[in-house]
Length: 185
Image (cartoon, rainbow, N blue to C red; front, side, top):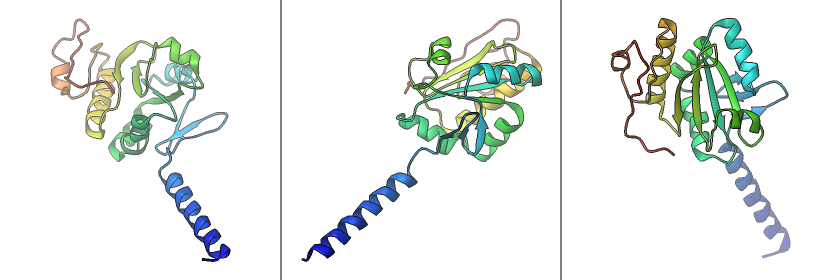
């Protein structure tokens, strides 16, 4: 085989490898103002999101992620862009995406140890519920809907994935915590 053919084959292999990794890369883009995840704009700091939440009266989703986290990639490519989820996030929530490798202040503020983690807060900054780890589309949509509905009714019930809203509303006078047997990832 001559040198020209060998170099052509090597170049083609390099292009194939590059395209493979480019297509499978986590679709997170950040600029000085926003982080873009799931086709939506997310604030980059808690303080930015908290100011908007107070102004609008909307609850916040604070999403903690890293570029190296495979479950974060699944959240960003499967869960957040899921059409019913995306619609609720865009209409009813203030979205904040905290890159744990960059924003140590907010990571430490909420004592987040590992990604991914989703934290739901009301417009006053009080924690509604926390989801440690990855959660599939339908379960996340269930939690998202419950948080939205509970926030609208101003009930302080803490919920976790997989629990139907009617079960979460059984105790309205005090905070309750309902857990599902789900490993943290």
